[in-house]
Image 1: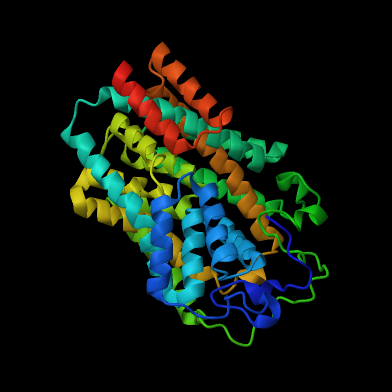
Image 2 (image 1 turned 45 degrees about the vertical axis):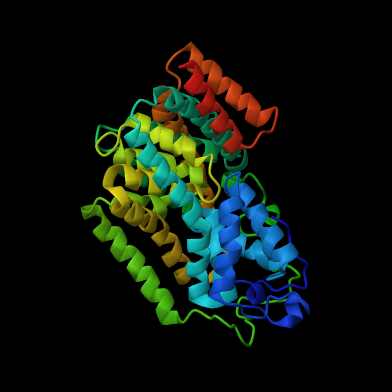
Length: 439
């Protein structure tokens, strides 16, 4: 994430509203409120065309809303991204919802969510119907599972390279792998939660020695990716934590923030008694990218609610559609509970992101540079790399590579992604077609 110019104040750019012209510049459009329909149409188009996964989505958002529509500046966009990196949940979808909130308040937040999510959710619901109706799809499903091996392997490598930079971070990742793979039957999901909690405690404990978890000195770390606040250590930003613009068009009242956080915790507790709790917990615990949702959902659903083959076929299909990867929940909900199941699963997995955004947007300017917060998130990110590593072994590898042919197809898919730089959706569709022909 890029460092902002020293003259920009974090407090004047972050949060729930628009900025004053002194900091954002004349004519950039960020100080003019919009409407929910405008937000819905903009994100609806992106939901139809945003292939490539969460990282690509962030690029699409910048091009559309910073460069073309000028709803906000690069610095403002960087701060929105930093906030969403600190919160659990699907980062690109959270960024979209935060941008919708900045533009048109709560209606804009909902409009951004609906516009960006609906296209891929509909496609995956239809895919679930197809898989259920045309049961003899072993060939395409084998191809999709082999492609999933390549996609998850690439995601695992990229996350490990970026998030596991020290011995302590590596130890946390290995701890998470071992905890999940060695957990007794029925304890996998709780073991994942425990691994995340333990990592968070370790991150808090070592937050005063940033190099142990970040692999950088405190000075370097202050300009790092997660916080990206040049004044973290009293730099030359010129602003203080207490500075805020005189007017924010869509300020979140304190009572609304508190209510949202209480609702988040209440649903977290209640969800353990209902089937949709698997989706809510997954949305509440995902750190480090959309691919991390795979082990969380797998532990809660496979094999009791859905078989591993259908699960992995849906995960492969989720790579081939535009929009957020979390609409994989729409496929799973449709497969296990029909249209009502798809609707509830989709809402449940995204609900934590919405509630946490409302709860934490107002205080982000004060906490962005907090060393303890950054230490906790860095440690959790290392642990979730381990969770993804465990999921890569089982079920992705064990069900995706079942013989020499699927092994060759998985290697070919990985080569297509890495050497030939083909987009994931094209590789997944190609692998499915090859599976249809060969298997």
